[in-house]
Image (cartoon, rainbow, N blue to C red; front, side, top):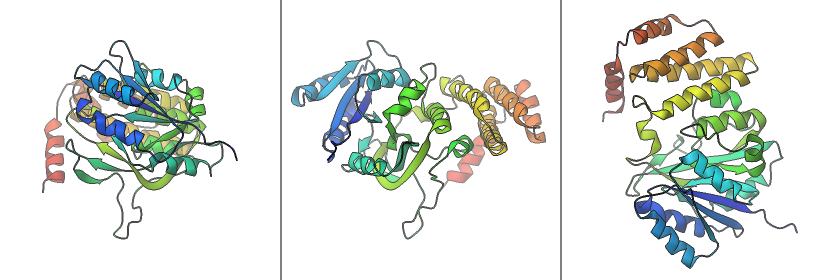
Length: 320
């Protein structure tokens, strides 16, 4: 019998002291026996390092790496995965929680897939800062069947069109990171860029199980996505430029146009006029620009802010 493949869980910490023990305990509680744990702290200032030291003393198999100075998620993960040895890798933020069967279920699923499949993802449960359950990532019918877009195979166009993957649920073959050279360290976040570049080269597989608790709290990266001047939106523009060089078919071009329209709308309605202009320029290169987006461009160039429209829309959509 061949030995079990090694799975490297790269645990990324930055000021996660409130959640760190639960996160690390969830990795240690995995039923899968062949796991490498690499904890990378990006120079936390909240006491996280003391907690990590406590765990390293109790569990010598945990490897601890400090980034030396605050360098951001993309660089921190690259440091971690390059120091690891696993056949499969999990990018694990230490404010989230792994369910006990997570690694075992994903390794088993990967074992039934051929080498074309580089990424496996699943459903997730969302929890609050205090751990209260708020719902699942994917909609389900009354009988429990999936009622949302979660494709497998060639998902390049689907990933251009919309966000449908819950990032912390992914398990990735090491060969994918080797082929890509890891995350792009010039970006403020990694997910969209990784999806675009990896799905051009590899297939994805959706495993219909809940494997992870994803915590949403005030310091979550996504909370400030469209704040004016935020580096996250600038990174989105950069990834869209990459995607424009990778599209090969008309359906992929149409999917990219859908993405560009979405991002341009949100950029404009949040007062990010420079990013909106860049996104609309990319859209114009893909196909003739619809009239409403030509109007948006003119309003943006005049710095006319209609952000109130967006606020009213979300108020009406989410009110009880």
